[in-house]
Image 1 (cartoon, one colour):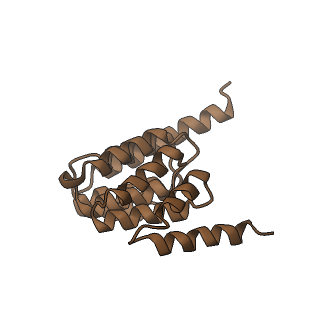
Image 2: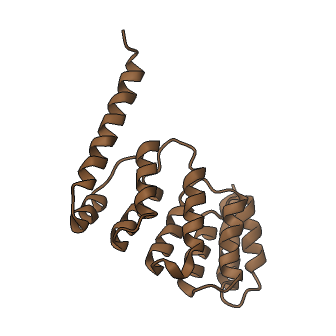
Length: 180
């Protein structure tokens, strides 16, 4: 007799493969609509698939929608491979669409971040990269302000001419949130 959990996981894999097959059968407009309507937690195979779409040479709008899904519908798995791939894509800079990079930063903000990702976001701001990238990176820091590394990054930005006041407000919010 087959164990029920095994059957469920096999059914999940079949459902995931059916979604992937359906996606591949669509034109770019259909793919974009499919991704915009996607509203379910990702299993690791779907996360890997979405990451392959983001990293592909498909239409940028399709890639942007897949990037959004990686952050919004993150499932119960180690997302280190996604964080690493998103950082590589963000670092590609000039060879990628600006909106794609911004959306990759926003998706990164929703994943399980550690000090490396926080420091990466801080470096985007300190290196004075494109202002939209800086703004998305600051948003990542602010969203994760309760993490010690993010708090330290915000403290480093207090004297920054562009983000100093916002960093101070974010740190003040942390203090208010920490009060009983």
